[in-house]
Image 1: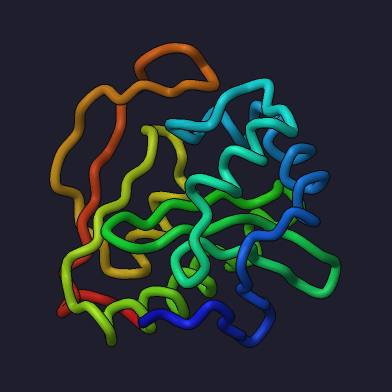
Image 2: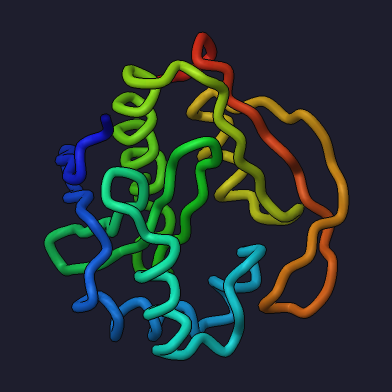
Length: 165
């Protein structure tokens, strides 16, 4: 069973909470963030967050990422790794740091392959996934809800033996 809380050198990973609503809604109303995500709507309303909290965010699988200044993003694990970070956290290695910690815990419990992916042009996510050991397995159009259209998408897969933890 995955822990609900994980500490890294710079981050606290904890369950998503109702108190995260304001910060999450603010970040996800930035098309520069949601334009890279497949299922997140834009604009993003408080009701969208409440639906996510009640239907998708599971302790031990979905984590709020915090640094000393507060919420920096959300990361979900399981059969598929997905994440977003607030623009203030871009380029600091937080996504790689959090994903390494989550995947190490997850693969210790369930050594099954993990899927992920990114829309073409999202070089930051491409680098994060490559650093973790993910390999490309295909490319095809995927619907981006925030943009209201299909976009070229790169599918990635992590074999447990390839994990760079």
